[in-house]
Amino acid sequence: MRDFAELARRALTDSGYSMKAAARAMNYDPAYLSRVLNGKQQPSRSLASAMDTLVGADGALVDALLAEDDAARVARTAAEPSRLDGRTVESLAGVLAAYRRLDDSTPPEHVVPAALRQTRDVLRMLRGARGPYRDRLAEVASEWVQFSGWLFAQLRRDGEAVRLLNDAVELADEARNGTLAAQALNFKGYVSRRQGRPQGVARWFAAAAGTPGAHPAQRIGDYLQAAGGLADMGALTPALHMVERAEKLTDEAAALPPPATAYWLTPDFNRLNMGICLLSLHRYSDAAGHLEAGLAGLPEELRDAPWTWEHKAALRKAVEGM
Image 1: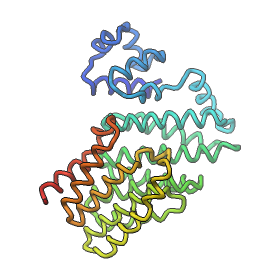
Image 2: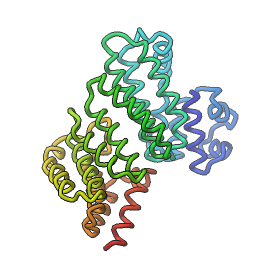
Image 3: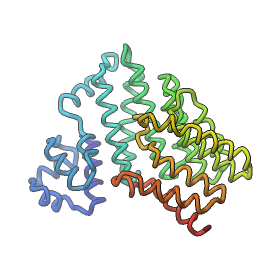
Image 4: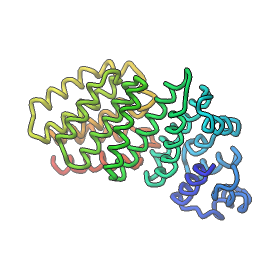
């Protein structure tokens, strides 16, 4: 309840609504809305849905609110983790999916506090969990930790980001999930790129591409970004070899849906990765073409996501270099 209240309060503020203005727009009692936004009362699903529509959260805000029976089940499991059941695990995974969608429309600093609390709760649950659902909970825990690391990476809190991403890799390995391990390594490459360290870019993206169990769409993006790091180091021949590896995976990746834990890895998204790679290779016209097409190919709700700043900046640089 507290986490939903914080997310909703920040979403309303980001959208320019005061509490009274939001209550008026949704035709709800201001006193009731105040209690909800201050974490003193559980919102109804209808109120959560109305707020979601008001702020344009595309279902993410309402999905971040567990149904009453699921919330009670999660609370019981948190108190007695040894009684973990499958429905609890999938409830936690569903909330995480909602948080990921919120990250596509909300500044990361507004998601961090609630995400960290959720992450800590899941890790506490994992420590005491037993039985057949523990491995699945380890996957969900890895993804929560990875997501928190990604949020910190966006905020340039690099030390905290790397610590969390290292933990996410360990949890993914424990769960034997190569897709999650590869994504955590990918985010470490992103941190290195933000730091201007091409050696780290090449290292971590290459490690992600070589992770057993990585999805072909992940490996395409990872090879391309590793190539960009190598190009920035002046290692052009190895960079081009990485590009060739990525291109050989195109048909295989196109035949598969993106991994559920990296839903954004569509062919259009990997055009963005190709554009950044070509920019490092100083092929400005080609880079601009891929970046323009990749941005245009994003779903409408993602085109202004906070993380798209990097691709838009790369496009401007490519156009300037033409």
